[in-house]
Image 1 (cartoon, helix red, strand yellow):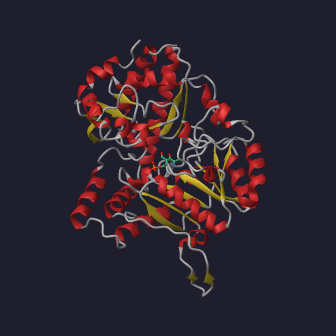
Image 2 (image 1 turned 135 degrees about the vertical axis):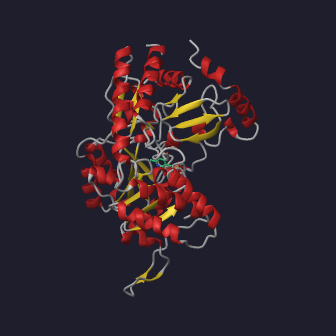
Image 3 (image 1 turned 45 degrees about the horizontal axis):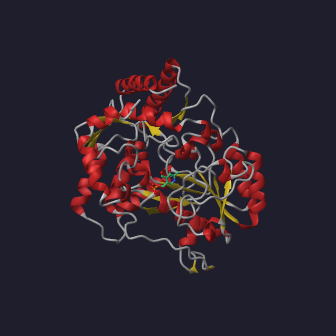
Amino acid sequence: HDHAARYREMTPKSRKFHERAADVTPLGVESNIRSFDPYPFYTESANGSYITDVDGNEYLDFLLALGPIILGHNHPKVTNAVQEMAEASDITATPTPVAIEFMEKVAEMTPCIERVRMSNSGTEATMHALRVARSYTGKSKIAKPEGGYAGAHDYALQSVHGSKEALGPAEEPNTVPHGTGIPEQVSETVVPIPFNDKGNTEKILRKHADDMAAVIIEPVMFSCGCLKPRDGYHEFLRDLTEELGIVLIWDEVMTGFRLGPASAQGRFDVIPDMATFAKAAGGGYQVAGFGGEAEIMNEIIPPGEDEEGESWNSSAFHGGTYNGHPLAAAAGLATLEVLDGGDVYDHIDRLGNRLFTGLQEAADDTGVDANVQHIGSMGQVYMTDAKIHRFRDTWQANEEQFADWWIEAAANEVIFGNPIQDERFFTTYTHTEEQIDHAIEVAEDAFRAVDH
Ligand code: PLP
């Protein structure tokens, strides 16, 4: 059965764009994960809960730009803030009040953040956070969970995916560079740990403790679907990293300002030393950043004397032409003002429960083996009846069946994230109960249409 037949029929202009795009950019897309079979639709506009493509199809959106769209597309407060700022100033690369106000708001809302710096992507944020942690500890290695994605720089692109053969023993996974072009010398500084496996996480961290600068970890592993932390895992990691003198960095690029006003650290009541954020913090604009305890973040201050006249040797560099871009800062500030104290989290979590439990019921009713896992407004459908606690459990999910289900739903103008099993999708503030119920109906038809 050709599950993409109807999708192809309704997207002739997108197909033409794709042919054209392939002549100017590899894969015909701006970022590798936008590419899928048969070809992606090309977007004309986005508003509220919908994306309109160049053929005029209107997709009910649960991809939500991979996370940023927490208030719906083009929330009027965000759009107005950006328009007003665009008239006042483009970038000047001089400090601005709006960026300071945004950073104050981030620090006020985020438990672990006393000092913060802005960047333009999650990738930059994690890269800089790691350097600061190395500077602070004087050590060079970092640990990250296997199966985790912490951005597209060389230190993070290690053991992101991989087969059992490549990743080796679950107790002590191999470091596997994600793709070519990554120096061996970098891979040697990265140590994978098994998320949700306390015993082996502890063995590995103790073994490398003398060289280990930081553990960088997503509080919920959304980079392989939706792996929730087992009870006590984060508390255990908090205590152990403290004991071993390792900086605990929570990579809240996905969860930051999404799982609540105080992010995952508020939701789970565990306070890391440092955190990164991006996506939801910008409400659709290029906002990212990293922060933490003042003592750690002050590593960024060049050598000299500190406030008490003590001399200072550290100098972990952080810079960037576009850091704190006024448009991004204005969008971020407007977004956080709507998020803080409003009803956004109640709304998106309630609709998240409705969506993800509805999807589980739809799968069960149609006899498809699926396990829907979610927390709040974020979740994923794993095409397997197995419970998924660890990264390696995700290998049991049926990739092909997921892609077929996704494209069947897309052909009915509902997009459940990306057609990739180890991603996830979201609810947003503009979603309504009617939209959720419609999406569940479309999903049910799509479950019926896949082979099982
Ligand atoms: N960290 C996590 C947990 C992410 O999910 C992502 C992106 O999806 C990144 C870092 C990288 O962020 P960006 O795509 O903005 O570079």
